[in-house]
Image (tube, rainbow, N blue to C red; front, side, top):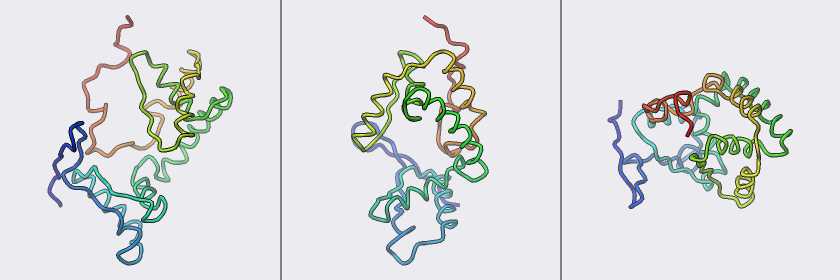
Length: 184
């Protein structure tokens, strides 16, 4: 078993990453033929379990090849979860069609409707996607639509973990449940 990798802050903005990353170039290209996928997924598991949070991937190594490999690591996208979660996506997509928006815009609209103190930060590298994200601000949801979306995507409805156990999430926090909050 590898030693637990600590974390460091990069620059002055407080970005924290593992003290050492994992270069993924040799997984799919260069340095000989591509390596067996299962071996590379096992390596990714081991790296994350060891505390690695910084993975160097690039389209130069084969368009999206390493990103797909990292995605296959995530349990949520494993075959035993994928079919179940696909049904949830289809329900969400039906609502998006009814609303005249994309599923991504619907998801962002749902976040916006959580309250005036909630600010989603969707990432993108494309102007078209940026414009779609901003378009989510004009998607209005009724209380019934909010309840319908929440019934599809509740924590216990979606199969597979989004993060590995080594990553701290809201599940590790002491935040009281939303039902206990007082409306001002």
